[in-house]
Amino acid sequence: MISPIKIAVAGVNGRMGRSIVPLLAADPAFVFVGGIGREGSMGPELIDRSAAIAQADVILDFTTGSAAAELAGFCASAGGPALVIGATGFEPDELERIAGAARMIPILRSGNFSIGVNMLVGLVAQAARALSAEGWDIEILEAHHNRKIDAPSGTALMLGEAAAEGRGVSLSSVERRGRDGITGERPPGEIGFAVLRAGGLVGEHSVLFAAAEEVVTLSHSALDRGMFARGALAAARWIAGRAPGEYGMRDVLGLAAEGPNRASEQRLQARL
Ligand SMILES: NC(=O)C1=CN([C@@H]2O[C@H](COP(=O)(O)OP(=O)(O)OC[C@H]3O[C@@H](n4cnc5c(N)ncnc54)[C@H](OP(=O)(O)O)[C@@H]3O)[C@@H](O)[C@H]2O)C=CC1
Ligand SMILES: O=C(O)C1=N[C@H](C(=O)O)C[C@H](O)C1
Image (tube, rainbow, N blue to C red; front, side, top):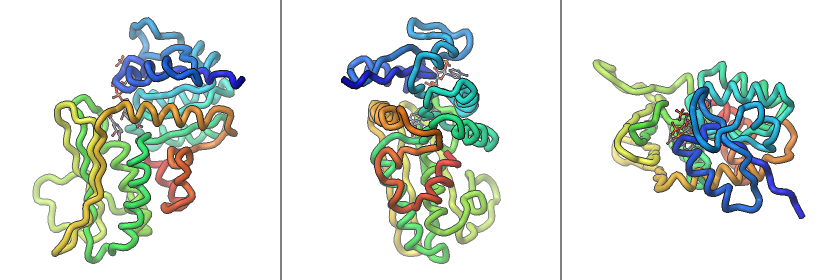
C-alpha cells in the first residue's frame, strides 16, 4: 500500500487554506499534519513552522510573496519538504530566493492552479504569435474580490508573459501597468494591464487582441476557489518525491512541452 502524503498548509486560516483543509481530510491519499500561520495568529490547526517542516512531505503555501520566499529558504536549509507555492505578489529578489531554494528542494510555483487558465496560457501565446504588434493591441484585464492585496494578479502576469513570448519580446520591455492622466497615444507593441477590485469576485481574466476593425477576446472565469484547491492537491501529489528544481502547473498538466515552449515556460514562471 502507498503511504499517504503528509501535507502542511501555510496560510491555513486564509480563504485558500480554508478551502484546502476539508479536501485533505476527505482524501485518503493525504494526511494533514497542521497549518502554519502568521506569527501570533491563533487556530486549532496551527503548528510551529519547524514542526511543519520536520513532519510534512509537502507544504502548500497560500500566504504572500514575501512569506512564501521566506518559507522556501527555511525548507531548503532543512533539506525538505517539497513546496507548492500558490501565493502571488512577488518582488524580483523574492523570486531569486525561491530559485535558489529550488536548487536544494523541489518547488512548484504557479499563480493559478486551474486547468482552464493553464490551457489559456498556450492559446494566448499562439494568438500573440499570429496577430502582429503593428495591427493588434494586447490588453489584459483582471477582476478580483475586494480583499486581494496584490495587483496585477499572478494570473494576469502569467498571461502577459505568454503574450510577450508569442511576440518574441520580454514582458518588462513592453508592459504598461495601468494608465492615468495625459498618457499620450498608445505605442504599438505595448501590453497593458487593467485591474478591478470589487465584492466577492473569485477571479476574472481576459486578454484582448484589438485591431482597428475587430477584437479577439480570450477569457477565463473562476466560479469557485475549490477548483484552485483541487489543482494545488494535484500539484502536491505530482511533486512528492521529485528531484530538486523549479516546476510549474503546466508540468503537472503535461502542457509544458507545448507552446509556449519550455524556455518560455521557465521565463513565465519567473514572473508569477
Ligand atoms: N495559485 C492559485 O491558484 C491561487 C493563488 N492565490 C494566492 O494565494 C494567496 C492567498 O490567497 P487567500 O487565501 O485569498 O488570502 P488570505 O489573505 O485569505 O490568506 C492568506 C493567509 O496567509 C497568512 N499569512 C500572511 N503572512 C503570513 C506569514 N508571514 N506566515 C504565515 N502565514 C501568513 C494570513 O494570516 P492572517 O490570517 O493572520 O492574516 C492568511 O491566513 C494570495 O497570494 C493569492 O493571490 C489565491 C487563489 C488561487
Ligand atoms: O487572490 C486571489 O483570489 C487569486 N489569486 C491568484 C492570482 O493572483 O492570479 C489566482 C486567482 O485569480 C485568485
